[in-house]
Image (cartoon, rainbow, N blue to C red):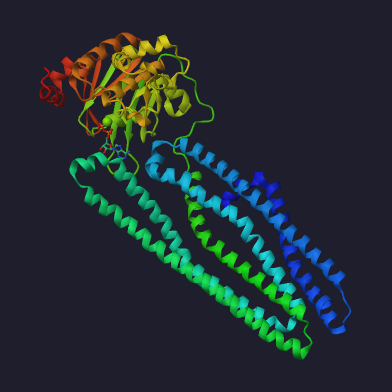
Length: 576
Ligand code: ADP
Ligand code: MG
């Protein structure tokens, strides 16, 4: 929580202003009962005893009371205006830093947090902290000032009644402590439960099609209900606890009032306590009581915000597993990609996903990687793009270890078509231009043609200006892949990596696409990851991967002869 305090720093002028205003408000409010006791003692009672009218004094003091009450009101309005602005401004900075941090995360960090949790942390958790910051200023700063002042003033007015105040404060602190000790831990659990509910609902919404297809709605509903009911029960418990507090406080208030008047009246009658002083004491006691109510209200909010603050700090303090070197090498043009003795395990995985991988991919050639699912093909792409860092060995581009390059420079060189074609919301044109905003309409058309996307784009309403909805859900899988290919080609990259990008295409489109690509990417280093032998049959070099190890390499014809694994794949697909 404390580490987030630095977000309040830019607003220090406003904060000092708020503190001064709160102090002013408290002082004005503390002065009111004193003025009132003056009116009662020196105005009304004096007149009753002596018959001499002191109307002027009463009016004067009354006017003074009005001014101070107004002043307190104005101060509190200004505070109510400024403090949410400070809290919202700090929250904006915090969200910005969080977002920048998350953007710099490598895949390792994403695996650690899960994107659902990262979203909650950037939104809901920040709001919790913001709410506290907002109320904190108004309540937790103001209430102690008022309470302390109230106690001091009350004791000065009527020292004989001080034991009542002492009793009240002890009971109040008792109530607040019991409340805090019971409710605080529950709030922590509530935040965790909210997390779980978010996770369950996200998962269910994400997999809705599967759930429908398998007819398991009722099972999923039960799972959701379980989380939901849990949260409700705990919420109810906390609400009930809080509901007890209010009547308890009101009872305390009534009891104290009666006690003050009862004891006070006796003191007035027998030991010379002035009526006005008794009334002042009465009001100061109420101020003290209200302060305690405010403090207890804020205190129950603290643990919730504390949990959120810790979750935020956890993200902000995450050490990046992949960082740029201070003085990275620059890259020369031709991009020879070389894997040298690369071994890699995913975080928390037992067996390595890749073991001792050695190969070189040359410009102007196609290097294909084939293997069954789970053999580590995508992992090779992940490592080349430096989504993860290698465990052992090194990957070089033009002879430079990629860990010695700027990540941005490395990725600028690579056109990557991920296994799952991912589009962003916008238009078809904005998606193709994503990696190269300077692309002319002519060039957009060209890459779309190469990617065999032009025909279906032309058929769409609006053509290149047709809308793409979030993550591209309004185009088919094959169309999404062809658009991803166009987007990668638009960057005019030196290295092109296709991760299983042809699997959603029919054979005919696959063949046409390969022919067009061959022409378009003459000088590029092309790495094609595939499962279909037909897709890679013409590659200069084919690497056969099995369980993270290379079990064969060569051309199609060579492999058919020397590599049993390749022969098996090929014959199972009817290619020979
Ligand atoms: P392919 O693309 O050949 O189907 P992958 O390279 O995706 O295979 O996966 C290789 C192995 O690594 C698999 O056993 C898979 O379970 C594991 N794996 C892939 N991604 C992760 C990850 N993010 N965390 C842990 N293990 C992973
Ligand atoms: Mg894969």
